[in-house]
Image (cartoon, rainbow over all chains, first blue to last red; front, side):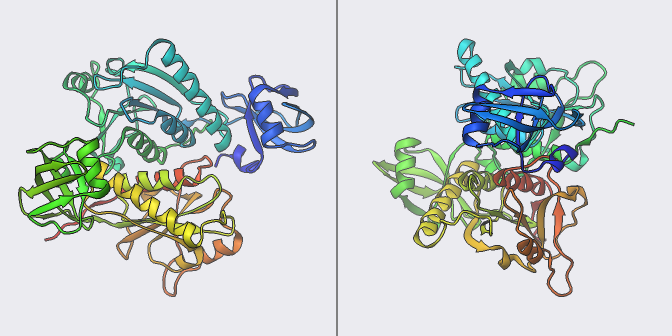
Length: 252
Length: 252
């Protein structure tokens, strides 16, 4: 647990752009804090800006759906976890992206990218994709509040597999891959875990993923046990395995 | 992927006690195979006994809700994964045991034990507990069919934390614990991953868990990243991490 969460482990936690000395939380968060969490004057909570800064506040006043807060201390920056970790997983029939985004947020990933593949379900496009992404970002925010992160993960998509080509730090989840203990730290400071559809990438996509950028090695392959994993299980399991290799960044 | 799943990767898979040459699948599984999967005469599927033996079969006849099969080869035993792995997690308000059991089954655990703790929800007892366990066992069986395991995990509970006292191979999920790479293999051939409620075990339970049996060391402590994980997330993440340390048992 980072110092921030350790010092205020059981308080409410929410997000707000701009951590001024006096702030007001309204809309959905105000409703949640006033009606669901039923905060009362004098209680302490933590507020983060979603970008790594957080600050403890005391509740000054509670009105229906709105909570007025006064800062208890200066903003503090939560250290980054390194290596940086992005998880890109394929959307297919039966994939549960909501579940994956919630669990990946708890596991501390910096970004989630939804991939479209040849074997993907087709209906993530245009306004439907926008609405689905907005919903996933809300889920990430709720999970980040629940697990007390100061940084919100980037939730992004839907991207074709070809966009990953040659990207530094690719790690493809692969039953025939390597033991995670043998996975080297990424040269560029970032892992991009790639999880294909349950039937695997189609041959052209697999070739695209395997072709390295000039001067680089191809992607690493990470073994996640012997069984056939659903896409969201592989994403969560892979993030859990890589998370144990991450540590707070030292700023000497 | 074990040889068994690798040889028949995309066929249907189901469970039946007794892998005779000619078998009939009826009830829920018969319904699923005939109505949902819509198997037809001549198709191949795999059937496992849930205890490690599996066998390929050809569909001889499909009637509504019933499928008659004839064996295509002799039964084969799927090797155990070692170390053995049991996950014991605390049931609390908001815990999603169905999700945990599904994902833990995909990740290959041998057993799941539901724990009651001082901070647990109280309504898992008597006939309600029996019904809930029966439901979790159905979920494990469905997940095992989907991920093509030949062994069903034992799903067991609800047990008080005190029953774990002095058990060999205890590994307690703990944010202040060790890096998984430093976790030694269990002397007794089995890990029992213990996940407490989100608020932690109460002090007496924690003391019970920490007191070793005579002549043994206390439980190992496994770090699963810096954030506050929901109980089911910690169970899944811990199993994913330990799963990467497991391998098929060699029978020389």
